[in-house]
Length: 601
Image 1 (cartoon, rainbow, N blue to C red):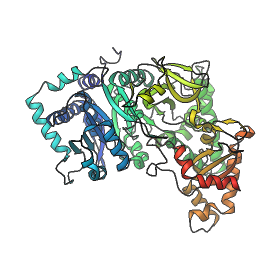
Image 2 (image 1 turned 135 degrees about the horizontal axis):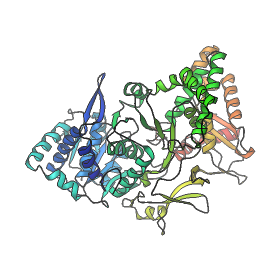
Image 3 (image 1 turned 30 degrees about the vertical axis):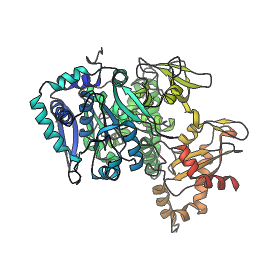
Image 4 (image 1 turned 135 degrees about the vertical axis):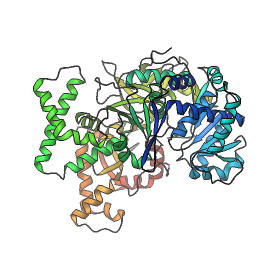
């Protein structure tokens, strides 16, 4: 049993939290210009209604329910209702195509499906007749779909109220019947290579990870979290959904990814789950703006950052900050850092960065400026968190020490292997891949190359399958170079290439807003992005940027050639995973001609 709560399943976690924190605000969501609130007791009532509606329509234990919707309180409540009924929730990213969604729905054998809006409903309508196991589709935020088996959410709630009034003890009875070994969810891997795999996570897996994560996160009822990463992803689901709920905190749902900057100022969160891409954008926005300031302001910022870095390093290595340095830090906060902190709401205690590597330069900058960022690490298969930096013990360049119940070791080839109660049961209907991932001794093979330092902190150097082997036989891990390059104000995205080549090259997506603003200032005329990237002055910018970024790397690690692209990598074009990681294999295949052209010059 937990020192936090008396629960061993996610259904019991829900029961515990809604009883203990009944009067606290569970969720906030925006309607028009106003943020609305809903308490834990109100959430419980609505979850019971969803539960009752599903039971009324015939949901049985071990049935599979799919959800394909953007983040909302309804998504969260569908999750808890499904889990409390001893059924399994399959998460489907709303950004997927009809073909991709159909494959997952068929493979996971969903009996019921929830979609967010008409947009998602219209992805399912054309293929509904080829989904024989799906009995009903419930549309959360739209009631205009004209199909007898596509029902509005309100219909489900109405049926649920009838069911609960008829069977008032059924909800708690079902909660008690849920077993830790039951499969709570199927989460399909993003499929950076090959066909997606359905990760089977049990209640025990996720609860173990929640309990471990709570020790690392230090959450209370005073906390509020802005949720914007997709709940379909295990990182947000565990860190931004189950963890805050277990401790009576408030989750505020961002309107959408484009409104995050606005919403963060409105709700003033104390904590957030985030991804490096957002932090990189914050970094480049601040540094780009700084370059336009007067020399006096630039010097003031540089002084403040130096003070902030000294304080950060002392505090996070257990050393005392002297009186005079503390006074300087107070002045730096007042004159410089307070303005940055206000941009993230002014109350932020910390952000947890995961899902992809965070460039050290960005992490050190933000932490020195008083925006605490703790990098963590995990995979869908591990529920997902394996390690995390802690408040006051934050070591930049690492993903922190393992969580309490996680065991680690480094294989002979450098791969990180892990064991723990959070490791998945396996891949759904795929024993071959399960045996590849979990060896006979029970170690899960992460696929990441790592080192563990003398303090037990883990440093991920790259994905095993991303290691580049040059024609000269040199092994190159591209992750660190890519992380440095994307901190430039001129670069939005980058992929290092060079397998079986004499030297490394790079596919570079420019930061066109910055580049176009500069072009106007320089009086450069151009008719298209293609014209712009071929301008000699633009070429000079990227020549210098890439050359400067390669300082400190060995000769064989340096990027010698590059190709500027006119289009950003996107989820819609299949080049990014839903957690914004670049699908290297897709990009390499799609831009093969550009790569060949780069090496032929």
